[in-house]
Amino acid sequence: MEVYAGLAARFADQFEEHGLSTVEFEVLMRLARSPEHQLRMTDLAAQTSLSTSGVTRVVDRMERDGLLQRRACPSDRRSAYAVVTGSGMARLEETLPGHVRLIQDWFIGQLEPAALQSLLDSLRIVRDAVHPGATAGSAETGSAETGSAANAGATTHC
Image 1 (tube, one colour):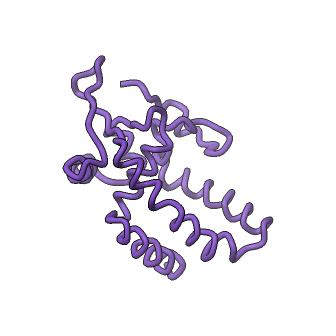
Image 2: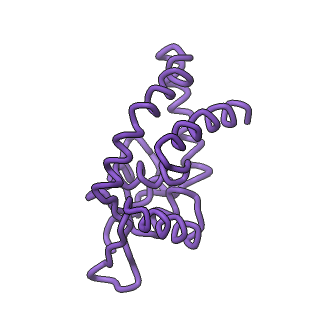
């Protein structure tokens, strides 16, 4: 808890400098790394551990700020995508260098390479056990990186 709280506080301060909350940064990152910079709203909810109504509120706010837009799914009227806009990508690109610097200084830089790899491998195992939807709808679904059988059925289709 102490590690999480310490890192979260450093990250939150840096995100705030760019007009983002922690959850808004996470949403931008997850969408930016997804195929076509978009995810179904349900997949975004699964990846962020937010409820569907929580994702709707965040997407509404980010859409008002011009960072995201919704796109209807042509084959399923019940589904919608959250899509990063050019402004959202620009905000993310402004924020990332400082974020990467903080990760380097306070996380990666604190560990020897072998210890870091072991920690990351272990965290992926725990992530997949406690949050099986963490990569729902992403291009990494079912890949060697996630190694999660729970993600094997996820899709980026409507």
